[in-house]
Length: 252
Image 1 (tube, rainbow, N blue to C red):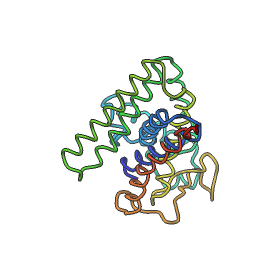
Image 2: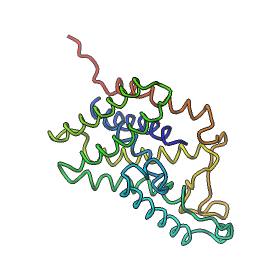
Image 3: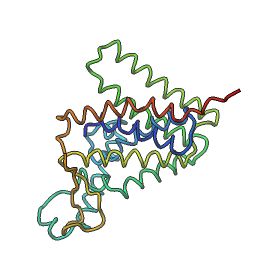
């Protein structure tokens, strides 16, 4: 899937995580923003990706190291059948596994636990990355609408910073869970495409440890109406999540 589609599905996944964890609407909105950015993290194995270029030289270097790590793990764990295929094991390998999604969440939890700035740092970075990606994808909306969207993104990021400066916001454990869920949403999104993802790693399936699972109705990335529908449905689902997180009205 395209980066904008991943970010959009991350919005819904993050918001749903907040709702299921019993958060209030403000925290659900922040979880949605965190989920948007977290849903881009698995593509850190590609220096040219949206997330790989997000912080310039810093994320480019991180991407290069992750790409090297992915190749190394592939070479050390691939079966003889896979090694004979002479694949490089870089993009859509290590960072697109379920253990990697858990690792992203644990890393976010570790940073968020550095009170009081840690949580704010994770939220600020993921919100700016995820919401910025969603906003940049709306190219057909015209200059005025894009400026309004950009202003909304900035407002959310600033509000998040102000909230954490006062000691508010989601708990570190919720940030970690949301990041893992967002990353997993990315992996499942790529499962819907024809390239597939190694969902069973490190277990062997049909003689391959890096067997690429794909949906029975897989589509081409960026060339499918299905992907467009998923992106817009995910964004449209955010208001519903906010309604579900609102406390019921009191009677009397």
